[in-house]
Length: 356
Length: 264
Image (cartoon, rainbow over all chains, first blue to last red; front, side):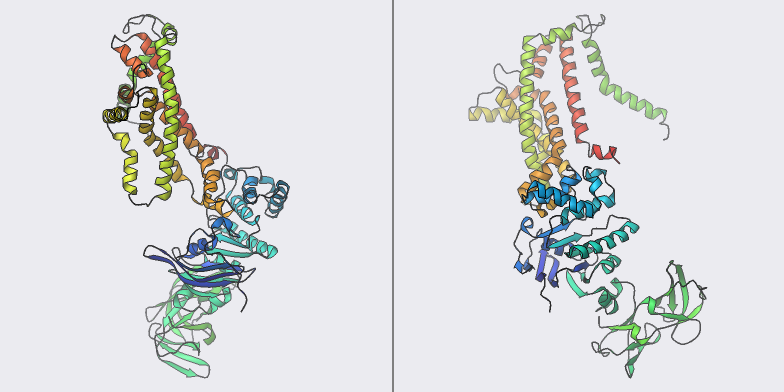
């Protein structure tokens, strides 16, 4: 087990009766780009604020690089935060905003100037140093906020929904920019986001949170391919989830009767799940094959949407349940249209069994 | 934009006339050459000359401006502290009562405040004069200053101070370095508002004054007893000018991010 650089141990935070963060333990390695992902109100921001030192945990411990910092106030922690609102100081120029943190450390003015111009160059802010924050565009403000936090060379950079205010194209661009910066500087980044695409794009690992608890931690591929619960499967991307009934095993394959899906579906035998209790079969839309003849779950195409890179179909199964399927847009003519009767099937290894 | 109907035009005309015609008449007659207040005798500025050379009036003006400046300073300081407590600490025990009591003097009858303060000064054996007027004005204008500061402080992004702390500033310094500079326009605005309120106060001043300390409004009021002279019109016009200037200046500086709306 790798020695954790940021170590969160049994951390809890309650506001009155409401438990915002509930017994969370996470170990984050040095140089990781770690995401805290969850819907609003899941406690991810509170967790980040406890790492920054803005909230005092009700119980539990935060360690940074081996030192316990649980009770160290924010201004003495080797962390820096990029705020959702950017929180740029309106009365100071861009240059003075960036220099603010270095001035608090009482560095020599020559060094401050040098480090400010260094980071300004890295983030293409050199021409803007004399402007006031109000005179900048959203993307420029975002870069100033990033520069102000990075110039302190923190052990950990905390980012609270850093791209929420940007439009979609700029956001994608900035995500790549963040990854590039993080690699170049070799810093540890912890980002809070509710955007699963963003989390998947930037992170080395993701912690999925819900109601103050961490449901799963893993690389983007791990959490996408092997979600631990129905919630995670549905939160991260899309998933067709059907409750499973009796199952018949042949070799490594399982044939599962599902009343919800209105037929039998395939999956691989899983060591983690017994098919005796309640369980569910989950399959991603892009793994579902639709054909006009053949075997599988029968249904009628109810909705079709053309999404550029792919074609999305919503199929109403005979059982009444819906099933989503997706085809890559290869440029070939589409042979399916709304109202067609189709059969949905998938490879056994495309399905995943979930206990909850 | 739709054209307002004749009824709308008429009602706004009637309303504004009712509010401002007396003031227009007052200003006009301050330039009257005639000694008779109701008879127009040609244009003249003689009453202004006579007003600013009137020793008693000048004395009253000095007291008024001094009292207004000092009481506004106290009111702004105290009002800011109250606003910080109301906005930042917010959910403390009894915050509803605190907020209510903070603004109560706005609607409290001035006579009641005047009598109670007079009683207090008498009981404590404090000699009445400019000092007691200043204290009284500071207490009554403080709530207005607090309201101005409160609204500005509530607009201020609390993550600004958090950002300063995050960058290495201890909490108190973070407040001084980040919140205070961004509240500067509100300080000016609160001060100007308190200043103008104090400048034209008559009731509270009359209750808390002592021998020899008459503010300008008190001087005017006592002159009126012997009939309205064009001189009173002239002084009133000057006061009106000062008050309008104060209010306009206070509005201009408190306009949120006036600069950012100009720069795109």
